[in-house]
Image 1 (cartoon, helix red, strand yellow):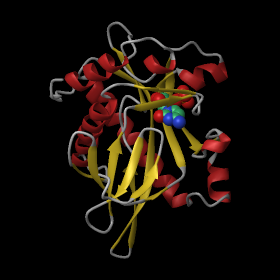
Image 2 (tube, protein in one colour):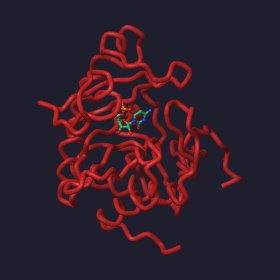
Image 3 (cartoon, helix red, strand yellow):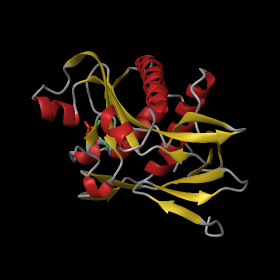
Length: 243
Ligand code: C5P
């Protein structure tokens, strides 16, 4: 991939110019960060697993009519996606109290929420991704009220679908983060799901044991991080190459 022009390098992924105009190659690294870059490490094989899990989930979501940037997987660590204009928001949907919500409101982790809660964070590393309201989003021009309507509707559909999908394989979808982009096609602008959906960006707990099967194993030094990611892939029916 050295022949391609590198467009952007993030914490867990590198974006390269794609083979055709309007396309991007997303390369999945093994690097992991937490607590806004204060904790750094690598999870061996994570990039390979997340490439496959994100491919699988984006494909299933596409099938139920959720538009995504995903085109196709290229190889072990790369996938071809549509070039979108990223909306600088992290959209978090929560079903069960955990992480920063449990912290902020003093709710025990694992307590079911009375309804799903959707939150917006402004995507900005220097600021540590501060939580924002729709007022901030529209006032600062990060998204229009129509964009926000589309984002909320899509995020709730993603939550409903993925909650059911994971429940079917004995996993509780506690919460997750997704990102959206604007796709310009034929004088039309559409909001589509972008980035990735993987155990890096979701909290996934085993239905029976409540064992964590996500990046919290890395954040909290619980060990067996790669094994947990592999188990999520295995339950989704994804066959990973041995070795
Ligand atoms: O830390 P917090 O409880 O706010 O995280 C909520 C969800 O969003 C978790 O699933 C976490 O993995 C995800 N998240 C993320 N990227 C961030 C912050 C949170 O994927 N920068």
